[in-house]
Structure formats: structure tokens, C-alpha cells
Image (cartoon, rainbow, N blue to C red; front, top):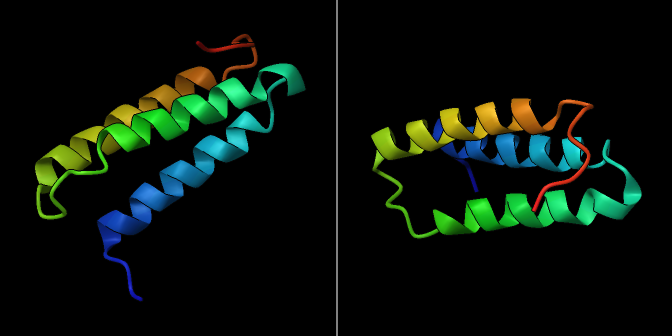
Length: 77
């Protein structure tokens, strides 16, 4: 199945979240993975054609990944 450009961007962001979670301490890694899953689940019902909302959520997600990937952030709740 072919994915649209936006779908590929969403999948890429999710993979980035999981990659960044692997850089966290083993005892808190699950917290980061659960947080990412929860955030993506919130928008699972979004219409595929609602490009504005999807692009907004992608920008917001990238900012969050940048913030949480900082080495100073050790845990998330």
C-alpha cells in the first residue's frame, strides 16, 4: 500500500519518537514510549483530508520531540 506524503511524515515522526526513547535510561524508556503512543492515539480518528490539523500536529510533535530528546530530560509522566 502506498502512503501519501503526510502519512509518511506521521510515520517518520513516530519512528523518531521511538528512536529518541531508546536514548533514555532503561527504567524510564517505557514512559516515553507510552507518552508517544498516547499522543498519537489522541488523533487516530482525525480525517485524512484535514491537512491543516495534521500539519499543525506534525509541527507540535516535532517541537515536543526536540524538547524531550534533550539529555537533561530524564523522565516524562
